[in-house]
Length: 100
Image (cartoon, rainbow, N blue to C red):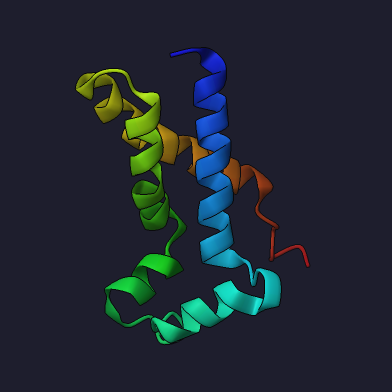
């Protein structure tokens, strides 16, 4: 795997995870999706999943790890690595709500 494959994978996992977990999206479709699956109340598997960036990034990273990896060992290592990269990017880009 080339180095930019890892970079692109992390960026894609972060973007898709952030879209589902934190953004409204066009026509508020992702906000409506989160409300429909119980994200407002934090109940149920899907509601909890869409409420947690860390959990959601693990699931989003699976197809990227499968596509980018060339062996099962590499895919197994890429899966948490892509999630970790997305989490680090989220921490760096998240707004500090305490500063206002």
